[in-house]
Image: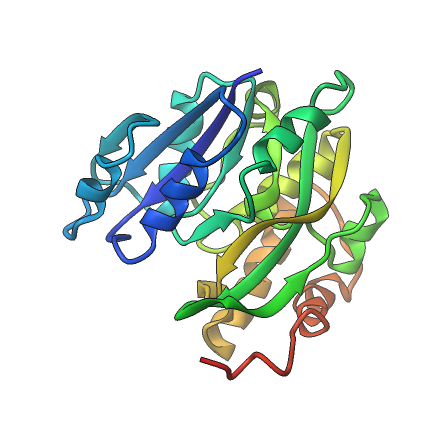
Length: 253
C-alpha cells in the first residue's frame, strides 16, 4: 500500500526541515512525498533538495494553500493520501506504519488520530491537545471535527467526493471533512494517539475579526453540502478548543 503525503510550502525554510525529516525517518517504506511550493523566495527549495526521499516537487504560483493541496492530490499516485503542513511533523517514526495497518481493513476508507499544538519557538512545550475520540456522525453537529493533519483517506474518496473548495479561505478543510464524513457516509477508524504536532498559530484564530469570519465560513461549509447544523453548532466548534489548552504552557517560551 502506497501512502502519498502532500506538503504545501511557501517561504517555509524556518520549519520545513522538521516536516521533511519526520517523513524521511518513517519506518514504513512505501511513501510518496509530494512538495507543492508557491514560488518561495527563501531557502525552502534548497532544503527540500537535501532530502532524497521526496518523490515530486513543483514550484509555481498558486491561489492559496488549498489550491496547492488540490494540486498535490491530483499528482498523488498512492492508495492513501494524507496532508502534512510545512510547520507540522509526525510524533514518531512508526506513525505511517500505524496508518497503513488501519487501512489493511478494506472497509476502512478514512483514518484520523489526535494532535498537539506546540510552542513555535520550543516544540517540546505542548500548548493544546486535540483528543479526537471515536467518530460518530452526530458529533459533527456539536462542533466536533478531526484534526486535518491527522486525516488520511483512500484516494478514491477524493475521486468520489471532490477536492478542497478554494472559495473558502480558512474552512476548506472543515468543508471537505463534512462532505466526506457526513454527506458521503465514509467509513472511518480512529487511532487513539497523538499522530501530529503542529506549531501553534493559524489564520482563523488570529483575531476576533478572523474568528467571526471563520464562523461564517464554517456555516457556509454546511450550506454548500445542503446540510443543516443546529443553531449552536458554529459556536460550539471554537468553544471546544478552549478545553484543549494547557494553561501552564500557554505563555511558556
